[in-house]
Length: 428
Image 1 (spheres, rainbow, N blue to C red):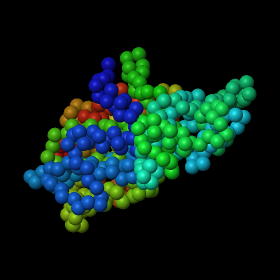
Image 2: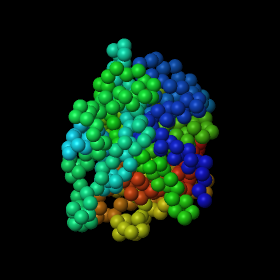
Image 3: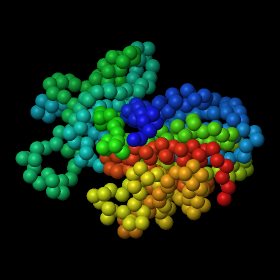
Image 4: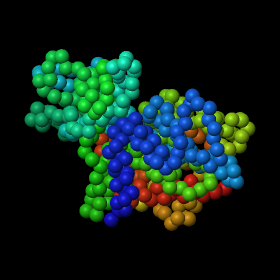
């Protein structure tokens, strides 16, 4: 049976994090409880050796770090993940009324598997900007926390070819069914204002929003012996939680850093994405001289933690026979000759040695030579910082589906590996 205490915490974190905004808010709460102090970019920072700090950008990206003690080597053991997941985002003017039914238009965010979104109980969450009773603009986190919508499939009787090469048109097939007889004057902004007021917020008018639909079904352990963890947004809240708990639990005088970026699923090119300036700008404030910063980066290591493709028993031909990671057999080192992953022999050897020291299993993934390869924040960060980097992930099924599947043992195994990474002085 899996270790329930750790998994219960993970499942609670996923349930509390339907959007990147909620994920960052949850991580902020846990870092504060662990004694980390929040920094503001507009303040003058007074950083102390051994101090623990965190900072956010856009409410959807978070960076936390522990500075080395005075007697420790000036380097950072860094882990990166991402807070976003493929989903359906509500359009700015979404109201659609047809045949007495109220629908909302949505835009597909990231490379989502679309078929699994049909016939699910959907809720709605995100960030809302309102004008309060004093005329001030205020940001709110909003989560309906109940099923409010669905996307019904068309009956097989009306589409006899539905099980044969059926494609999904995002514009015409995905408008979300919100209700019936809601009135010709229905307004999503009015609905959001009412929901905020019901939750104790003083709202005069909703000005704008960033909202996503999400699967309301709670995470669960499945399988005869509960071998698997089924949940939405495992890619990549799973790595966010593992990095968070490993960093908080690490007992070390060394420097540590965790960054969880937004917008990885759409290329990372944003102010809060991995291609943005956030990480480097924080590092430049921690190490204010270029010489010191480059010395620290030259001695540092970065692990990009993002899910890996487990070999699916129904589709074994989609993997290289020598590189098919299995669920519950440990974290996966991801390798690609064309630098879609940033792993090299040095960083791979370092992580394999760490796994051996704590008697943990380790696997390797290489995509089939006749297939394209996805990527992560690893190569982006390696290129921007010039830091040695490794791509690592928990093996997963159904990546980018509305509900993904991972091994129930792999989360804690990877947690132990990353905590060992934070705690160990490594030289190669």
